[in-house]
Image (cartoon, rainbow, N blue to C red; front, side, top):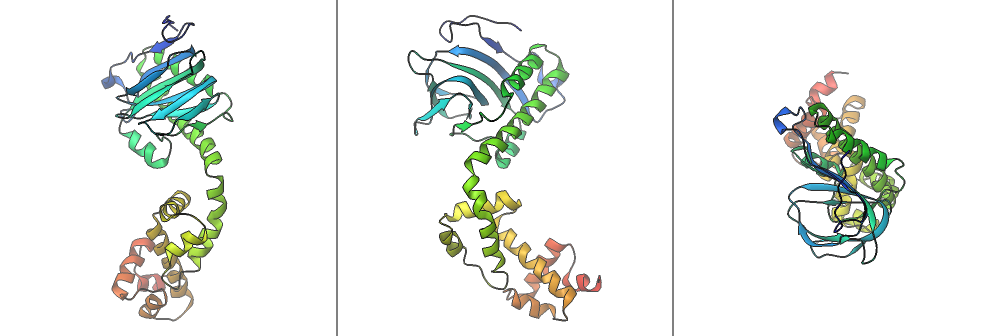
Length: 284
């Protein structure tokens, strides 16, 4: 793998790999790796830099700081991960007289939107991934695949990057969201207790000392559904139980579950259960 010397960046040889394959020859169109590199002993500190693409940065050793859009300065140490996102301003690097060992990969593509929604990438935060053993060797593999200029290897590198992001997100979320995961059973119980009424969501959030936005985020992360849809699904599951195990009329069941409009209730039931309430009862 080629190495170059740039004493403004590091006193040691660095590796910077630019794409060697034209994009039309790649099979994975939804995500493509751009430049990737390894900067051992980086000494360069950059101020108010704006990048055109997303990038993942991993610090193998050393320390420094990271700041996005003039917000709070965050500490960077061995095992830290952070992202650059396009259009934002960054000041980052080791302190004067210090250094760090850095791997980076930048990437583009329509799949980035899906990664954002899934929580695999997130700007503005330094994450700790020291528990991810062998992360540096995975970056080395990505660099090696990008170096050869073989289309299939460039696709493999993109697929490997997604795997790295997934594993990193599982680790960093495990550290960051431990308390949130601990309160989810209580939140589920509170929502279940509201099946036969209209839930006071603000009260549920207040009782668990979280904001409404956090309540929505926790339910979405745990179930995959938005909060309002999660509640509807709870009620429809109970409605199915009542349809199959009682002789109550559909209108009565709708009223018990706090749906004043029976037709609206029936539309929701069909949407979430795949059949009308009457067909559900007949299916028994």
